[in-house]
Length: 440
Image (cartoon, rainbow, N blue to C red; front, side, top):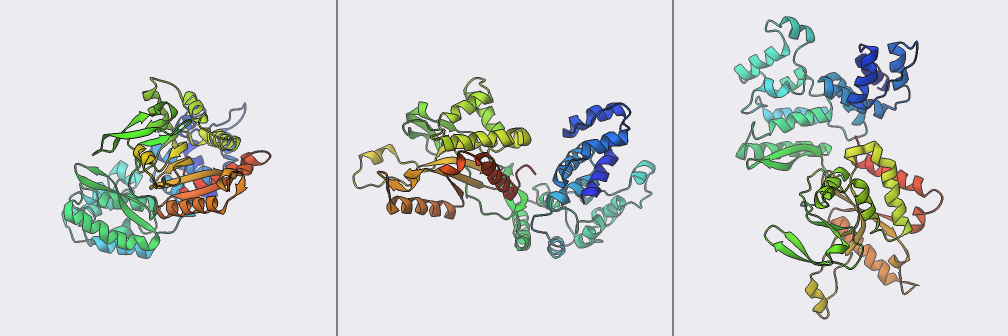
């Protein structure tokens, strides 16, 4: 597979002139093509691609494919990146097709919909004309002008939907249940029927947003995640716990009553794709009249309570900031999870809520919330004595969070300082990002 990708990308680059090789690949895909006196274009391309892993080649392929509208190149890249994911089997795809009967596009044209994701004519047919013989012409004839001639199952065989990438197949389903194709009761019934089939392989169509009051569905892995959307992140605490109230209880808009200077409050909408560092920086610039990312980083570091926390935070940005760029998830320190009303302090025989604050929180796509805890001795002791009571309270709170859909990962503080700490932190995030397909 790597050899195929290498050949496909080389086939994109080699027709370029020497001047284009020096500029276009870097502009399109961040690929630097070496220069050197006497080097041929082929030699320059080979040097540029020599040390790329299969996954890196796949990401390059997607970038070049997007710029060129090259479906075969896009497919080759996606199949490499999807290789370790659960398969979407031919049987499942067949049953999906049979669910649609002979009507994939609903109120839209089949050619219009399918042509966005599958090649329906050859370059020669596009140049010279097809005289009604191209796949595009056949679909128009048998599905748009004469509905019922072809079943969706037959269509899938003709366009290659039974063995295309999952991303392409999923995109086609998203179009088929889009409100422009199906709406109201028909849309919801179709989604429900498809999800019964897709769930067998671990996938689903999930509502992501609305358009003019109609649900918009996305194809994704069937993951549990945390119900609901996050609002009003209170984080970077560096002093007394602030007291809050509601500016608008109907909208859950909060206001800081006291202690505002000791924390930050992110109150922008957070999408199903989670919260990115770039989005946090944009918010910071807005609330501080233009302060930069470095200023935000310094403010967040002030809230870190130990050398171990500082090491984890610094390593995260050192290792991943440049590589992931705008796709880097925001690592939020000292985030309040449970919030007692101020009046609780005045009540007798009333226990405070457990796990008031998390050391770090990541909000990832598909409603995944990742809690990172750095455990010092206070997590296991009381008045410098080992305490089963304290430990029991901690693991009980962990259970409740996991049952609510959070992922929790604990580090001993000693793991994050001294020799090997950076490699240990990097190894953890590499595995976490691979699990959640971050940067792919």
